[in-house]
Image 1 (tube, one colour):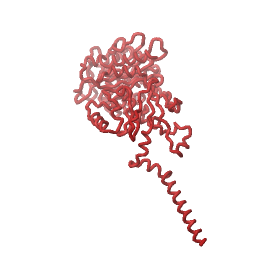
Image 2 (image 1 turned 180 degrees about the vertical axis):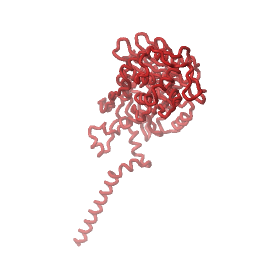
Image 3 (image 1 turned 90 degrees about the vertical axis):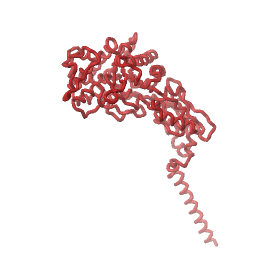
Image 4 (image 1 turned 60 degrees about the horizontal axis):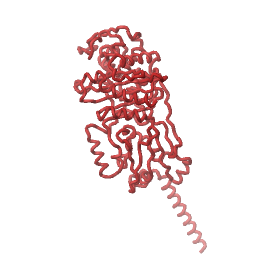
Length: 486
């Protein structure tokens, strides 16, 4: 009898071991598979069982969470949602996350192990940390000034602190309220369909995800290439630039919107935006040096993150001389995001050194303890310091004596460049209004802000666009906001 008892006991022990092994296999080795299984709602329920951490601007939270009392308990809410949507993006129970809500999701949802003092213990107990906060670099006054300036017109504004790369403003218009997408009911699905089919594309982040022909603002890059390569050595020496200028190898004649561009000096051509001078300069510099300079400023780079991805700004390197001439005045295939053009202005303002832009200052636990900081990114030399000095001189001339007078600020040194970007079939579309600039208060040691503005404004007439009548006042308001809060 004892033999049977021993055998039964051994078999029971074997079954117990098999049960424990299988439990370990299911709970440990296969845990990830079960967590990712769409049929498993436990992870989703846990995700929304506590308030999400907040996104902070100038010490003020611009997000929040509302207790709905439902199974997916907490929904996201946004304060001044349309104002900050191009930065926050949305966190939706139906449609996921975008922009900062996406790239910082681990911190905000509390799932990032960096929030836990004892991450291994959390792995064992499956405990969830409270959501952390994400502190941005934004200047609230500058953000509001940009939003008010656009006033619902299609366009975008990007502002950067040149010495550090901190993003001070990032605005896209028209915008939307991300709170409409937070829950999981019929109203959310209806809002998603409405926003997705809106021809004005309010969910498109034009500041970082839309590229435009930069028009004459690209002449900053062309001037930098001409000065660095030695094609131009004296800002006031006449150039050999006919008006009109016949594009090489074609019968097409390029003209100007103003008189006095024939053989104009670089200073005159820059102040009055002479297309003929800069088109010929691009050809004289050559495609290799033009492409190298554009690349140094950030064009043709797929890797830019702030921390969410930025659309690639392009300068075509496979062009003939006629196409190069047009590329050098910001047309043909040359395209740029507003953030990219703010980087161009920032590099000039910072003595030729470009700091890559960043939007997150630090991440903190719920109690405010910093767990990660972004900090200033390494700088790269875009152009010679002497070239940057000359470009600052040219850009201040545009504001003091040229087409950018609407950006002048009493008590500050302001440099700028207007732009008119043709687009559409045979350039039939109303030109986009561009303005890039930087500003330095008279009592400051260095420029405090660089700005790029683009306005897709069908109501503007050509004279207002080319004269900086649309975009320059918006840039001025943003720069004044930054200088006033410095």
